[in-house]
Image 1 (cartoon, rainbow, N blue to C red):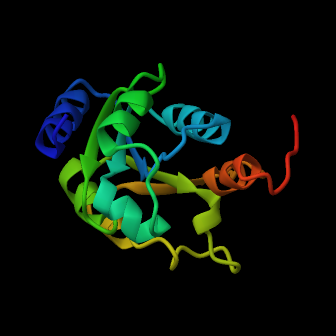
Image 2: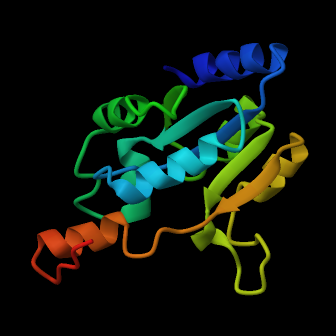
Length: 162
């Protein structure tokens, strides 16, 4: 779906009294850490909208050679998860504009965005979320379950079962 369609989905959900949760990410090589994270985000409200970084945006964030999977396919995979209600892709370097246009009740991100002192200065979407009245929730990071760890295992740089 387009960003405009996602914003309309959010408006419709709010009009029905539903709590709208927004999160975003690259979701390159979908893995169990992503699934656990998205389930936790969905538990925060009644409708989960996921913004998937487009190919150019993901490449900027993750470096040359990434993403491994195209934005359309990543969005399709994320959207196939039962906990996800709507998916859109975006090409901005951050999700600031997405937060502004969706205006969720809750904006969720991984706990790896928390500052060592507990603050949110590492999260560029924190201020825009506050501006639209959204509560920012940082979800626990699933240790050892990241795309980078998966890539390292695929390349034979260590395997940890379990």
